[in-house]
Image 1: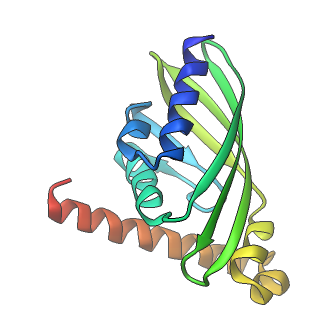
Image 2: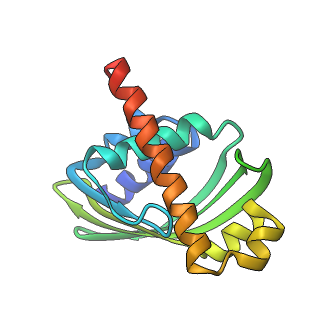
Length: 160
């Protein structure tokens, strides 16, 4: 098994256990992350995002398959099953992830999923009718950004 394949396996196995520290160990200090909700995170914000998701995802389960990894790139298909706390609705998010590595760590991480599909599950009728609109998708992003900022502020107060 290629070392970067093992790295991706460790990352998602840690996520399955909601072990944010284990996930953070897999990232380069200058890592960046983006997905349809968190469009541009860098450095510590990436690690904080996973910490927030691990802490808040009380019923989170996930399945993953490492599709491949070599010296420079990797890919993973994964599915997250959880309850969206704002509405209490069940979500199954199907995600394709792409990675670039540096010195045995994740430097660039891109997750791709259908935000409208997610909004239909998470928001119900509002998501079905309006989830495709940029206004609604931007509101989802803004709410997520506020949640992450609040999480980081609390962690900073605790010295974590």
